[in-house]
Length: 223
Ligand SMILES: N[C@@H](CCC(=O)N[C@@H](CS)C(=O)NCC(=O)O)C(=O)O
Image (cartoon, rainbow, N blue to C red; front, side, top):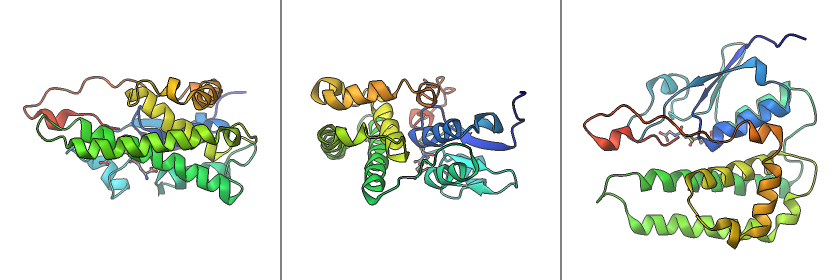
């Protein structure tokens, strides 16, 4: 059967863990072919004007639905795609699963904030803030490592997806170089779930170097 023509657009950045959540849900729900990926560079100090037009807080992902409505943020997009696609429901089915999903979201947030702090120019990086992010990241990894049995629980749901996106982003940025040794049970779970098609096809991709401009701060890609 021929693939459906795209009738939705996803404003995206190839390394964003939040965009990845939406793309994983799209694939799981049989909607990948209906979504055109529209690249929107996300840079420190350069809020993307196209994104602001559709989402006033200037963040990707934004999904343009078939009726032209702009849906954000990733949680709303995932819920929308979950509701219109085929296959098992992905929404977290209990308070515990919702909490695990929220812990995953917190990990995505902290990992991203840390990276945005790290790429400030020399002299502007606050080491104390990096320490704070590191503490939050290590306490989250340690918690997840301890509760890994709950991650291996079927059915596959948003908690699995969001936690995998958070860890995937940390891994991509090499934020915690030896995390596989320190949190080996979690690493085993992550490596296994990463083989799932929806995860392997959405792995964070290196971004092309931005065009040089005089102020280096303005060139840093952060998404
Ligand atoms: N809560 C939002 C977070 C999205 C987010 O932080 N996106 C980043 C890219 S990974 C972004 O667009 N940042 C631009 C900015 O903060 O200026 C969601 O779940 O979609």
